[in-house]
Length: 341
Image 1 (cartoon, rainbow, N blue to C red):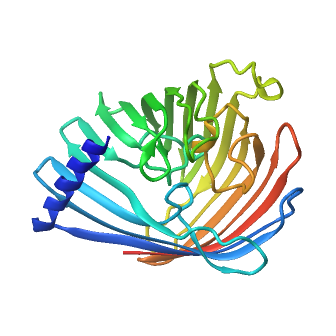
Image 2: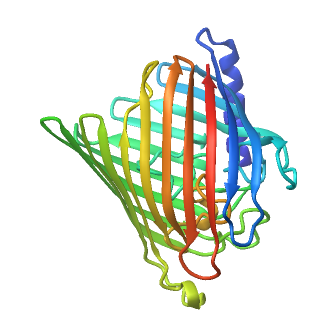
Image 3: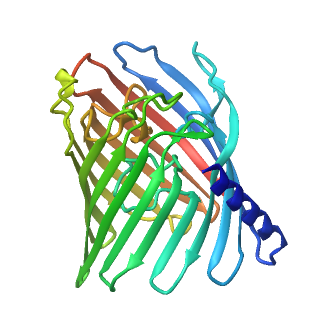
């Protein structure tokens, strides 16, 4: 993996001499208030995310991209740093790290991604994989026809900033059908995670093997989309008596709008039910609950408005609680804006 990243870094540096270099980035400013916990103190703070990237073409078919981000190097699904604390709480780390670094090959019916890549398989929500995490590996999109596409990926999730933990293999079939003004998508997938012990940072269930059958599906009509993410673990966890049958995950989402131009609104309403082994706890969505990424259920609501071509304002409320075991709950309120260039 180190040799792979060194080769990509060298290739990316060659884009400096290209004529079509693009520098891009964004900044997020976020007020966050977390309350109504059972065993945790309230937390209120002002946070920020800063990202800066560079991309460019190497040949007609190949391009390279790299991006730096603020956040926690050893917990990379937390890109925000804390600027101001409004109550008594520890000060988290403030790091800058290479968030993504990859090559893209685009061909007639295929796209190939190699390196530290963004998550590419089709999911309605982040319930299974937090999109702030960028694993090392290879991902292939192959178009079979106008309606059918297959996606293959072999990925090494990160244990902190420099090491990896386990191996994640994915096969997904994407189907799209249109009927007058209605669009329907089906994306069944098989996910095979081979766990690895002795992780230094990513310790939440990464030592366990887990296999999943998953389905992401949606129905779109006149700007509205009703979507669902379903997952079922095929593995046995009899050693965890209380959670041995907690192997299902579900997210149902109603969404409307896209932030295409100034004045546009976008909102979603989600219900989440994520059992302990229905996802890989370490890599599941981190945006809705402070206390857990699995063994949780509740509602997540988000509203955003595009104020101008380069920035939007929004708010998000997540009300979550545990499913089994010791009781915990939390209400997370976010008011935020993003500037993008």
